[in-house]
Image 1 (cartoon, one colour):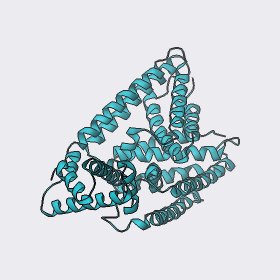
Image 2 (tube, chains in turn blue, red; image 1 turned 90 degrees about the vertical axis):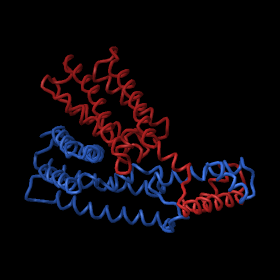
Image 3 (cartoon, one colour; image 1 turned 90 degrees about the horizontal axis):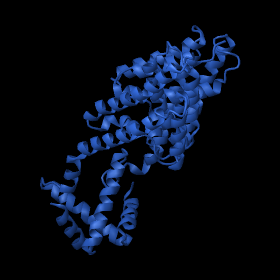
Image 4 (cartoon, helix red, strand yellow; image 1 turned 180 degrees about the vertical axis):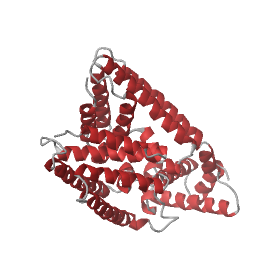
Length: 197
Length: 197
């Protein structure tokens, strides 16, 4: 069936003009394409869609909890100096990405990237999750400050923020290049750029 | 997108009543289903997908050319000191993102993020585009070195690489937060972290 035939079929069956049928078809294709492109589903075909928002929010909560636990286990590791804890987190992330052949990244980063096609309610929650990770990272940098690894005047909240901005970029690039190099390059620059005591 | 939303979309875009849009949608689904059931193809979808790869590659080429021109116009600006040229690029990006209400980001970064769902041929080309931007950025940092703004021992290729890793993360975050703050925070940290002469 070609496009002309389909338009005729729509016009006949929907009792509208061919011009209206053509416009209706274009907007249907457009909507389906855009939705599929964004990774969404069209509920005529799949019936799970009504719960997508709740499902997505639940995914965010679970990933945020899992990740907060991971950060705490690294940043609270008293057997290492504070900056070595950050290095251990980076090494853990590198081996995690390698294990999945650089196909998996960060759920929060992925959803953030796709916000244009997601419910607006996700935006604030994603921003809050980053803020939570930043707070935990800043506490580790504060510990580094207390132990003289970082200068007393360092703005640890701002530094933690920069870490997560750049780190998400590094995860993105690591996936693209299927290599740990971007993770290591950014982590090294970040550590070198910390104001030292 | 659920059926009600799709019908609304069709009605609005095709400028027909909701009732007509609903009938048009039903007959579209009906025709596509019947054709597929018979083992036939619907040539609008088939046609679209056949050219998807070539179309995407063309988009990458155009964006890469446009962006290379933009970088050259900033980094080649002899009226500014080399590091001020980098600042001018950042300021230009900030105003560009503000102008589109932080809805637009970087095509290369977006495609890189979506590689799992894209033709594998895109991967190398996207990596090459980043390498091209890095080369242009490294040349600007080399000019900074020649003018004594950056230390002679600085590894400008590596620094340019870190810039693009972090900058794409900053663009991602700026879109999420609808704010220029991440762009400025990363650019400031990057500039502060450059080895100085």
